[in-house]
Length: 322
Ligand code: F2R
Ligand code: MG
Ligand code: MG
Image: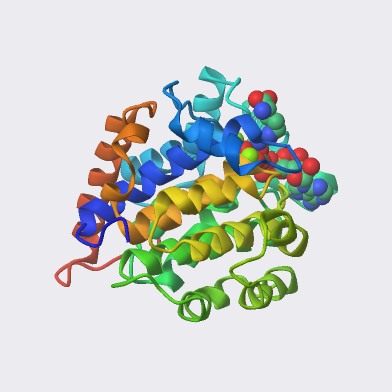
């Protein structure tokens, strides 16, 4: 393992640094059907800045909104996402969210705007799971609670049931991994999170994880699970990448990028899983020093931990807003 000594604070920091590292390492390859491991290695060892895309920006927004409201407030979260997009629309957003932000500006209520996409079905893109790590963190050790809150945060932009379940699955996995005591077996992790995503599209792929031998090359894994922008492809792909290298964040994230397709997002979600399990010390110094706003990510992680301690304490009671 890269680590094993990080406490809760280190795991919170590791998850957010992992999102940002995976996002930035995968970004140059996004959309390529295949990615050579040598190209990923070269980029991982380069010295250029690691710049975030929408994956990290929306993770920051989600965390800020939870902290500002002391829980989920859909109108506030929608406004936060929209403000961040207005300030930096060039961060590589999917097609759907900017349309939702335009609807909000036109006066559509936050809980109706997302339902208007894709002929009224809502989005099943991976935009909700890619940003949901903070939910898993504040519900660490409680995959069910993480899944419920994740579904609510998803509904701001991703009204389709598959988009919501993708967020629930990713958040449940982060929540479980933060409290895991050793690199988990595939079976234990899958058992812990399976209920979060009951749709067949997820269940089939969770079953498929068990049948993927360690020696399969990335293109064969991608053919089996998918590597696309759909939540039901990319969340299982991230679980696979983490489970391929459960003791090494760097290897897991680099493997995620070699799966091709939606590389920044699969790697961001893999980074969240690995960081939650292994902690901030699993993020190499050479990556951290290249990361945009690493200090801010760590401060937000610390704030999330401090806040979660206030309402998880046995002397306080939690409301359903969380
Ligand atoms: N958008 C990108 N990458 C495109 C290239 C960016 C380029 N590098 C640049 O800098 O400009 N990446 C980001 O978008 C993904 C997250 O997307 P999100 O937020 O889920 O968006 P959306 O539009 O809701 O869903 C994505 C696509 O999925 C398909 N889709 C979703 N729901 C559908 C439905 N009900 N029916 C049919 N298709 C559906 C559509 O093609 C959506 O546009 C991340 O990869 C992030 O990195
Ligand atoms: Mg992106
Ligand atoms: Mg992407």
